[in-house]
Image (cartoon, rainbow, N blue to C red; front, top):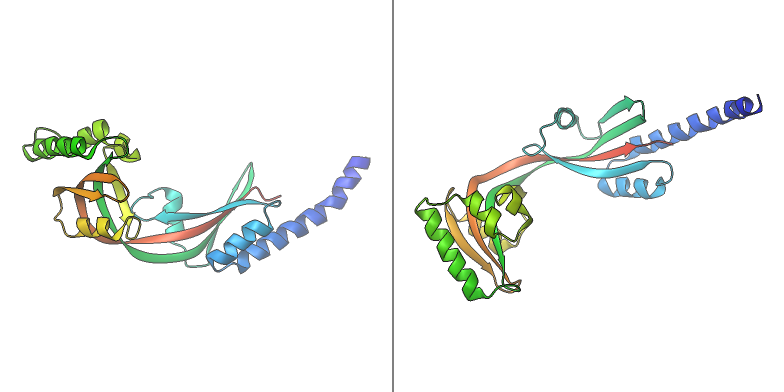
Length: 209
């Protein structure tokens, strides 16, 4: 009976705290405000900022979030509680698509790298090998396991030289590229023309206490 009475006293306090928390979420309109919220309420809720790309993210949830206007919310209730998604920002930016093989001259001599790249380029030109198969074998980049595919990359992710080299090529063209200062050397294949892709930044809040 004592514990039941204590629980009854706590219910209004919990409801007030959640109402205050959700009111704070409603007031957020920028990434900076979202970051400040996450810092201020780290003990009351678990949350993070997530970026969704319309070409990469095709889930039912992602499609529903893209339909929201800026400032809009989607609430999902489950046995484990409530999760709130709030759309903070929506914009369109230029992306490019390419596949790469990376060779590191910190670990291998440049002459060995050039010899290997000549072998690779010749094999691709003669259609003796597929790019993705060679990438899985020779590339030192994390994308090796997916055949070197970078997917859609937002302009500004890599160096200006790297991105210009890709922009200047035609789709399907394979070429060598070097970042000597970083000791990084590539075989690159441009796989798609540049495309403007919509992206949204969403504040996800879960485990409201």
